Length: 291
Image (cartoon, rainbow, N blue to C red; front, side):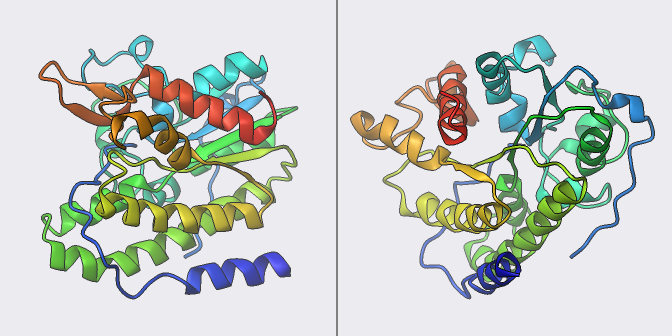
């Protein structure tokens, strides 16, 4: 009962306004929803003990390399190596919290990625939620679960507003409220499978920590995520603070710190570099007490 009251309180705290613009934080990261299991129950990898859920951060997407799974190295890969547990990485490029639950909800690329026949680490039908429920219900001994989701919810707001600040500020409270409800549904469905193992939620980082725009936006998103995840007994891997500390010698710039994928012209993409992914993995392991 205390958890339910805490979650309700968190959802009521979504601000009616924000003080700062968030015009540069869109990440191509990657109500209650009825769950239907994925069409093929055998998709639950029987010898995998670690389930990774998320968007393109967990997927390890890198726009500077050819589309191929061998070119993508997300934090779950390094966590898997460290804990000596094979990972079933169900993450999807561009996934939003809405598309995580519903195949008809908008996202920033997951639907298109699948329709184009691009590869997934775990091929499955249905939604990522479908696969997670299937995996946790059918795997004989799941032992670890990580999740990051929500960055693309903010990106969708920008796209829908055509990057108009007034529209973005007006729409932000509703987006955050919907995100909280979606995350509540995700964690409820996970727990209803009977899974009792550790869960670690990874928070989002900023690209420039001297920019109050990004810091304010991600702080709100991460706060909602951390509060709801904690209410379900999940550990919080503070990716936001981990990147912040690493960027201090570089004036708070994640690109200059080498934490983001760098383009040939010296600018950076929003996705973590190999260094950034390893830092996120270390943060997950620390939260889980598995360092």
